[in-house]
Picture (cartoon, rainbow, N blue to C red):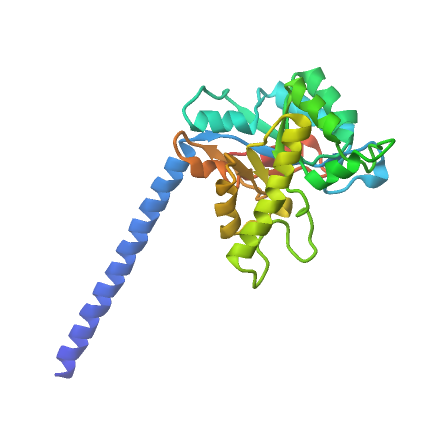
Length: 290
């Protein structure tokens, strides 16, 4: 009896072990196929810049010198990378047009006034383009400044109109008053907040910037940029309800744009460009397909 029991136990253990092994194999095959399908899309690195200043004392993880920015652009140009807008990725995803062989997206968050001073001239010099994410509240306040400064000012409505008219800049919505880490983390839902309250707050904030840009600049952004990269399931739903074709996050990972798969256009990954590392070092990471 005990011998028979030991045999049955051994058989059951063998079956369980075999099932586990088969499950792992199936998972690995599925994962490999999923990765392969993912990589069938067009690899598109997205670089995230913020403020550009000459003042060395201001350089940090989010402030870069104009010289380093120019080195980045020269590197991209010499190595065959072609700048595109987020809207170009959207069009490709929807089956309209093609993308260049090596597309890259340059994004500039927050709408700093020094974009006019240092970045636009470089875009013109090297025939580049960029996506600028503006904070409605910042731009509204900037309109009240008599003498804007590259060190601390933001783009006002006239600046944004100028950039949009240049054909080199695409404008994205970076919230109106949710670019903050106070009570709410960016535009994410607060702990204990009901979905209806959150939906109302998100819509009020988002559409305020949309309306201000429409009224003052004649444009309506189709790209939403999450402040600080705080994303939640509720915000993902609301971004789509607001009619945005794409959204930008901050995870430092590659992007693959696949025709017909709109999921690849949301929460897109970006590599933050800090100071104090060389262009070669940064680009080796940012331009890697993973």
